[in-house]
Image (cartoon, rainbow, N blue to C red; front, side):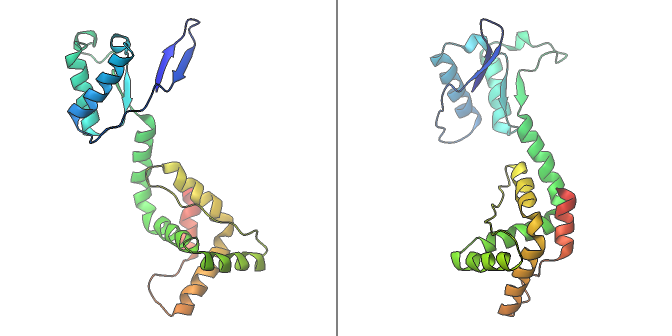
Length: 196
């Protein structure tokens, strides 16, 4: 995706294309970026490039700056930033670090939700359980670790069902006579509510 100023000085965003990458290492990333920029003849118009914080990305940008003789345009005091780290990626890293503090509870809830939605017979029983408790049955989405807001959305969507989910799961667990995995508790949900 590229952002540029149009003739009326409005910022414009466009997706120029996608390029396959067999493997991500410094030289390969650099070559893909260069080929793309050369194809559109915009190598000399680049102000900044945004990538995540992976070592290969940082190294490929340093290679790009060096090979395109851009270092002379970047002051020693860091007045300009050529490689912008992706803010979304940085936010995700911060949130994931924070999630480690409550991972036992969040992981437990995630596992229970995944189990409820894992098969049609279990989910059908859960639907009946919801109806008996006056709740509209629904299928919950689990999260993806690389998207911090998905964990928030997963928890937010199931919090009003916390008692129903807990009763259903613990009842099914008791029916099997298993002591592991552990029962779902109000403490798990308390931590989830605080996180949300």
